Image 1: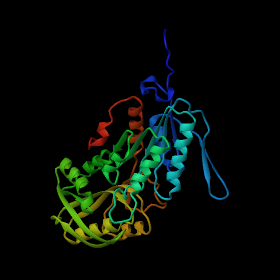
Image 2: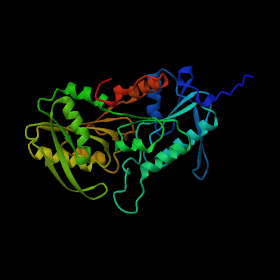
Image 3: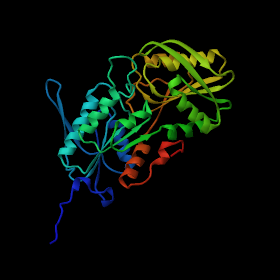
Length: 329
């Protein structure tokens, strides 16, 4: 007797040439359009209905049954951006998408990766649990604030680095006395990786905080006299730490101070601080929408080509390891 087992179409291998759909939440549509164009495909149509009390409901306006679904949405504040992503994943699951991949250029709540004092939540773990509970099959993100957040997930997690965008620009600058710097001890590992790859010196700023977003005291560890200093960090929030570090280094004899930071949150009067600081210029990416008008010291480098390339490689089961190191695109 021959027993025929039913095929689970939802979990068919990617090699069986499923159709790829790329969709976006409202918060990151500007970037999703560039990613879809780089990939060579139109962005999928989504309608978000909003009720009078502020409640909203996303709806896919085309069939996605059996397709590979990439949903692009950064989860910066407000929390509606995260919840919209969760609703879209839930809708895709209920519409029988084969696999649902969340492309989260900026992973919000990543600064809450541990209990740093009693009776606080671990927000990053909560976000991971929420994404897992609605049925996400894979996560793609860039420059997490804390690498260990990858371990909060039980699905494949692709952690990309903006270094493949930043390093070529650093090389083109051909700074005569390049010295890499970390604005705080937490970023020392990132700055050390740049310094090793570029064969440059390394300095570190040590800061003490009075409270969140308020720097009480800062000192520089290392020699910056006559050096062209480049600060690297994953986030610019209020820009307090960054501008304080830049001003301190210039006061200690640095020739110039620049910064390369992946995620431009730029809350409060961050832009005003940057303009009034001794920073020569700042390079950021487009993982978060930037304020308009943009201050003249800020230069934006797009992540669209990297994310489009990773989507292609994931869909074709190809290696994406080149995006985990300092190899330029």
